[in-house]
Image (cartoon, rainbow, N blue to C red; front, side, top):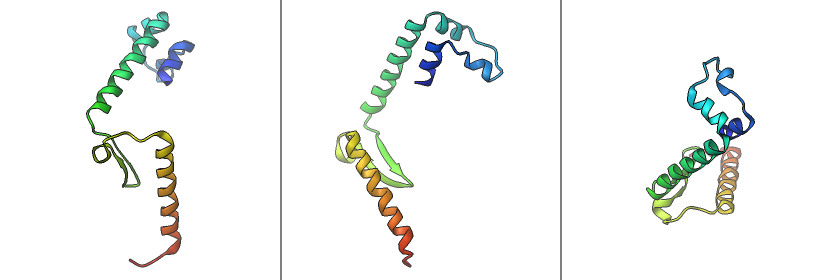
Length: 101
């Protein structure tokens, strides 16, 4: 997303890094529409490949929250936010109780 915004605004990110501007970046700045479309389709292709592999797991503080291998599906955003909120609330309760285990 940041790369697309830099292309659309014409920002030379390599100047910030004190590096010479590569020729492919010059092409991206001159052909903004094609460059953005190419980046979009490339990102979607990579995302599709990663999701179709079945290797999709989410963990928070080394606590597994979701596994596509176990459930067979990817969580909906509201469902995932609820799981994260519950996990954070339980971790606060465990830290405040100071029980010896």
